[in-house]
Amino acid sequence: MDRAERIRFLNTFLLEEMPRYRAEALRFPGDPVSQRRLLRSLMNLRPPMALPESFLRAQDALLTAEREEKGVVDPQTLPVTEAEPRIALWQGDITRLAAGAIVNAANPGMTGCYVPCHGCIDNAIHSAAGLELREECARLMREQGHEEPAGRAKLTKGYNLPARYVLHTVGPVITGPVTERDRAELSACYRSCLELAAEKGLESLAFCCISTGEYHFPKPEAARIAVGTVRDFLRRDRTLQKVIFNVHSRENYEIYRRLLEPGAGPVPGGR
Image (cartoon, rainbow, N blue to C red):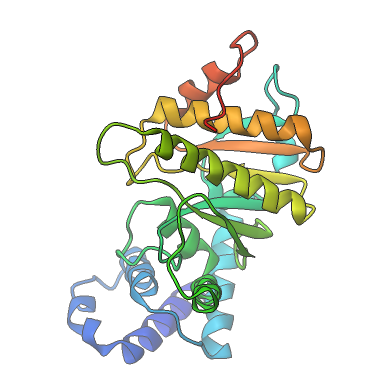
């Protein structure tokens, strides 16, 4: 199958499985870009269930080709900051990083974002990894028996991502002034991911900006907590050779750059 045939095959399968979306699917034009958007929408909507090998082969071939088209980024090529020889700052798409693990800012259900083509990091990571990721997350949550509290971390495979693993963590939701509990929970997110990565023997780990999007943690304070927690951990542990702060916006890049530049001084870890 070529790319267009794969997309058509995958859309047909998902619409047969979820016929309630057929009417909405008819609103998508037949061009390749629109049909690919339809596929992402259906994948976002699909609840965790087993998938036949024929679907997985087609899905994985499509996502692997798209991964190569976007370009895989080797974390070892990212320059470290002058003041922190094991910390790098990179503005770009976290789903391109071939790190030991990338961090996903998850929701308490831990099975990804179900809003079609939503702009959150949770949606981006699940969409690039493929539906196997949602099924593994669902299995972990069935075994746990309750929603994931803030400040912990769970590890899954990376599937079609260039990263070997994904670390999923739930950050605090900010609805008013930031509290000490909020700060402690955000710091715990970073620390839990670092500890799990080190326990797994990983050499590189890439963080997104946890809780600063849909969960509304103020970006400058969240960055201070992130940098302080990572610095504190790296002083005590030598397993991780590179920790990457991955940012999407120029605003966040400048916040982290100022915190990481020489002479910035100590940064509280939010404990």
